[in-house]
Length: 242
Image (tube, rainbow, N blue to C red; front, top):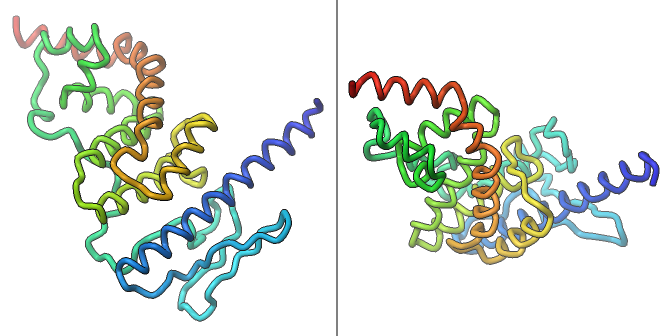
């Protein structure tokens, strides 16, 4: 297979995912409008004719911008926001801080040693998650932990409207191929998420969350416990207790 053939195949797959994403956005916007009694959003569902997709936009809505299926995120396309304009209390930030409680306190030497032995110990500790997140930020992979924390927060939600809103934001921030914070998921997991998003609930991202957890465990965690940051943390705690 030539490089050009492979390139065309990859581009075709990206366009297919983009079309699926746009259809998903359109359907969720329509559901939100029906539920909240707000006017339909400016981006109408995508209609397919053969293999071509033509998007119909509402040109009467002030400030609306037609979607260009831009995969490089170079435009302010209206499909990138997917906001519920009728809900003033909706929060865009899915950088959920589950680092509450004693997260800002200095970890003990015993606690740090437990982190070196177990990734589960890191993830169950507010202080451990905080330090691990600082390390991931230095490696430009902080979005993995952000996604995991957002999923944990979603699973604690009991209000159905809030579940759908949070699921929508998680998808937009971490699953969409148009997001700069997109996490790495294989095609099978991504298809599962897309299917779950048709009727989102607190378990919509369970498979994706587990996949990212395994990725962090196998890839980032060994580097974390062998990093200069971790050694300095250990030395600081040892000096404090001596």
